[in-house]
Image 1: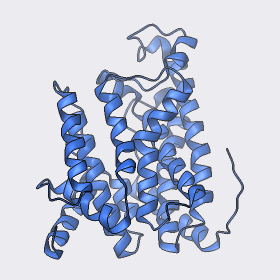
Image 2 (image 1 turned 90 degrees about the horizontal axis):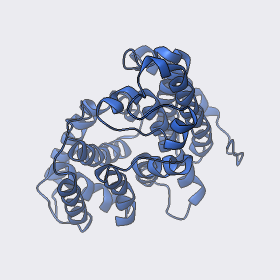
Image 3 (image 1 turned 60 degrees about the vertical axis):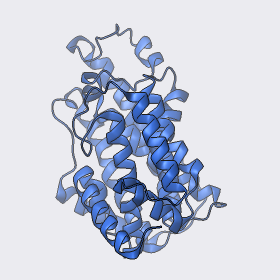
Length: 304
């Protein structure tokens, strides 16, 4: 088992990981109370490491072709299982998982749900239908939302709040897919359902050609609209969280929601350069989230 000194070092490692891998998430994470913030960092470090191993990235940078995706997936599964058993893996990001899992009651199934997303990518999977896309987004982001909710203290039997947390992950992923269509295409990946592309009569390999930019913009708008619906649902669930967690979640929802809103507003110019949210815009979302967090009232209204 890890000692207190090891935990301190791993928290420092996780803090550096989130600072490099996600400026938006790192910004929002500062709003949690110290204990929750450290646990969020620890969980993020594992998620980031798995993603980097699967995609040949360095903290979310440009994807590189990997010639051993199945071997990488096997390593992710083995290291994760070892960490979940409470054993030291000697891989900092996986030891981070071991700590937060022990402290927050994270389960092997929760971790397996996330890893299944990497398995789909390793198999060269592509969504055929809306339902396929939703399932993929659950594994790569919604399942992470469930784990994050557990880290914030949501009990395992509070299915309603866990579902809303899942929706926040879905909102993030739909926005990311819309923003990264060109980047994914360059890496040989496509997360737009095949049924959507067929309905737009876009030939294979022609997704980013100027001739089909109008159709591409329409499909991106569908992703952004889905992101907005899930964001609205997640905001309802935030009412059940402690104040600091509620503030952080609402801030993150606004910041990532801005990505989807910017993609939609940019139309055919959305992929001329990578869309991002400025520090000032993030600060505005944090301020708006504070007021919402203070005045939030619990409601069971479902916007979906």
